[in-house]
Image (cartoon, rainbow, N blue to C red; front, side):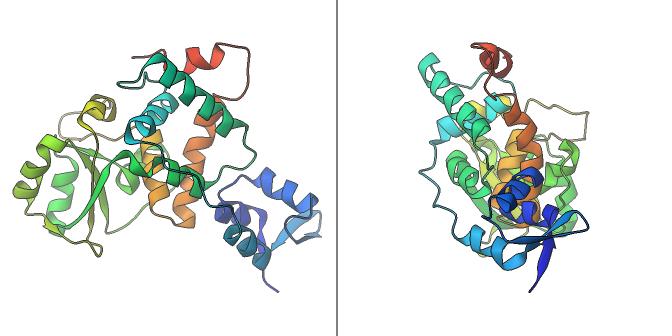
Length: 256
């Protein structure tokens, strides 16, 4: 029988350590106490991961960006008051949920942008990542937003829909649907101001907001990326935990 640590089990399931300990106490995961510390049956972790319920329908791109903007403390672009209220309720529900499910969050946010994969010359990657027409995302921005994740050999960027053709021609991008070394996400034009809000210094390029980087990491569907995304999202969602009426609204959507 193979065992893993509580931390390893938490990373695999996309939850925090306390959730794993609670599942062990409730006998919903199998484990053993050794020297006062839990070790977790690896088969039990795999069984729980495989038996997780299928996530619900994805949010529309409009609502996905609304969620991401609110998590960043910004006013959601192009949303009405009632739409913002519904998203606020969704965030509070996610914050109250005992288990931060990577699969559920990935499914909710997957429609936020069109995803294209390209091959680009390795020598051009650094220049592309600092190009003023792109915003770094995913693994390319993770270290800069404090996430413990790197993806050597792969670059990830967002580009405004009106600038995609310029980027393709300027860097000789070749579509590669089987993989490639460059992931380009094309979001709706109306969210670009939010995406590019971190201007950075001249020649340094721009990074997507932390909530967006977390959504990108979830798309990788890797345990390490899921754990890094959870590390970003958990404190952002904590701001939406149940509190006196109106407090979440003030913290979540007042900044423009």
